Amino acid sequence: MEEKISNYISILNGKPADEIIRFFGKEFPGEVAFATSLGAEDQVLFEMISKTDPSVHVFTLDTGRLFPETYDLMDISEKKYGMKIKVMFPDAASIQKMVSEHGINLFFDSIENRKLCCRIRKVEPMLKALKGMKVWITGLRRSQSENRKNTPMVEWDDTYGLIKVNPLFDWSEDQVWEYLRSHKIPYNTLHDKGFRSIGCQPCTRAVLPGEDLRAGRWWWEESGKKECGIHLRKNGLPSQG
Image (tube, rainbow, N blue to C red; front, side, top):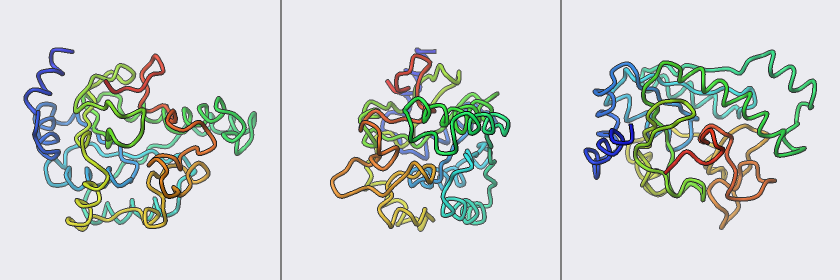
């Protein structure tokens, strides 16, 4: 697989993001999935997918704790692009057990509790959503955080057992917003209020001037090491090269 990944990178080196998406759609027809959190990067990719390969399986994770603005954007985007976003929910029994044992806002009490909440609400539904897929398209960018600074264009993800494609890996935040505005792509209105990275409502705040892009996510934890677990390998390390 390592040889195949290297070959893909060689073929696609220097190609624009939409061509990367188109390439994998042709290589793995019907076996490509795109997980969207409705963030700025993901809105760029959703627009590209709608034009290059509408057969891509588009889904999102509804943790049950999202912002109302995120739900509004989901509705607006589906209508604009004529594509349905499959909504994946966490297991109700697991949520009930977790809340019963640790409380409704358990994530504030310890990092272990926060990771437990993320695992049940996000990682486990993600595993179900990606089952049977060969390729996973993400909105990861190198400049998003310290953890993601080595994000490659294409990699093998051993947690999910598939090829992980990051078409915007080398894009800057300015490039993302230039593309959004020039193509009149709808985006989460929370971005206009200082929210540069948007997740669950209790665990996200606006970013202050000079702060890291993802500083508003789980802000009570140590900066630079914060991930929900979706983009971590089995060994607990970030899943980029």
